[in-house]
Each structure stands twice: as C-alpha cells, then as structure tokens.
Image 1 (cartoon, rainbow, N blue to C red):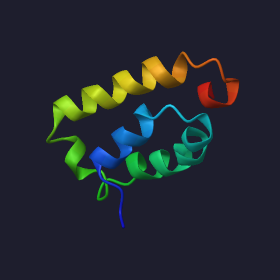
Image 2: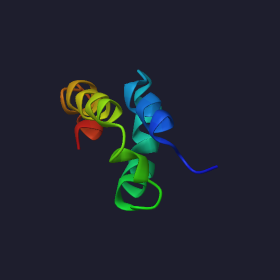
Image 3: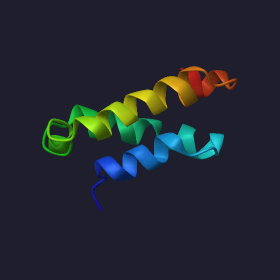
Image 4: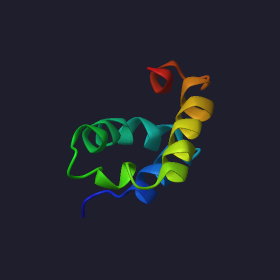
Amino acid sequence: MEPSMEYCLAQVLQKDVGKRLQVGQELIDYFSDKQKSADLEHDQTMLDKMVDGLATSWVNSSNYKVRL
C-alpha cells in the first residue's frame, strides 16, 4: 500500500517515539516522489497540518534522534 497524505499526517502526529523514528525515511521517500505526493498540491490544509505537526512534535522533541 502506498502511503497517502492522511497516513503520513497520522504518522507525524503519533506520540510513540519509536514509531516516529521508523517512519522518518518513509516520509522522506513520500515527499521526494512527485507521483506519490501529488495530493500535496491540492490539499493546502493537510499540508499545513503536516508542517505544523513536524515543527511542533518533531523539531521540538526532547529526543535528539527525532529532531534530526
């Protein structure tokens, strides 16, 4: 199953640090592939939630591996 924007947002917002660490590369692959992430251009609200989630829960995380 190919990840969708909803799936990626759910992964970003989860609290489990171990799962966030595992999904990091999957998110990078999703955002890097224009065919997989075509829905990013059409749903600005979802993209805003994604960026907000990354900024608040990952960048500000107390776990240095998640921040990286």
